[in-house]
Length: 396
Image (cartoon, rainbow, N blue to C red; front, side, top):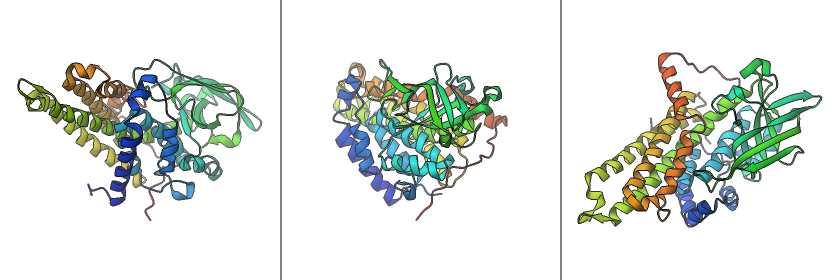
């Protein structure tokens, strides 16, 4: 058991933090107000090798371990949730899924350019009537010769207008329920594909989120990921990776809340002394510190299981649930510490509070994760072996 980061990991953190301070922090308030996603950030992340940080070098990535991905997500969310979300979707939900389940041909065609940052990947599971209840999805993919005819829509899709490739789930045999769902790699420029951004979001306003539509879209049979009927397993395995990145991002948000609050505690005085001297303010700061340290331990434990090539559904679920709850509370306390100024976008904490709400909903609500953890403890839930595991990290 080693709680020390490697020199390479520390260098990575320093590099991403400098990038965030230079490229995101000076502009994020303006982007958030305008509801604007800045695509140049993705290009710059690609230049730094961060779009495929944990993807093996032979597939165009940087070849670092899975906890390196957690570090990237921590530091990006310290800048804003929108850019951590972009990496979560591109790397965690899409690229890592192709790494785990894809054929060699699919890896060469899709994973390599994504890991290099030449192409952007996204993930399409949620539908208007199918969120936590995945089996309620309506999208269908009917086999027709060498193609599947894909029809339906997905909603709350990050990078809906930006991504080049989408990992999409649809029924190939609805009579089989969960066992009738299959996964497909879909390209944006295929006929029958369209997208539409969602406006008026509470938070993550600097992110591109929306709907994607499929109207008799012809998907080549070579773009079936895994086998027919494996889609539900693939989706759940993908969420193990996505939830890991969301949990890591929540750690970054707690850091951001603490940094802003500590600065304000030293800046603001009431009743003749800095507000940091008041015990109830100290209690909120202490709770942030406790949440930060506990969340980080949960996240990096899950990362080490990934590095070893072991199932981590239970551990990742716990990390996602707790870290996101801690981040939501930290953001609420940060606004309280700032008082009336916390209600204004003069300070970043109001954005942190708005942004903190979505992660306690997406990729498994806090209620879903609560039930999961209870069922593990009670012996009602067991993780069955997967046909294909996420590859263990191969050290040089």
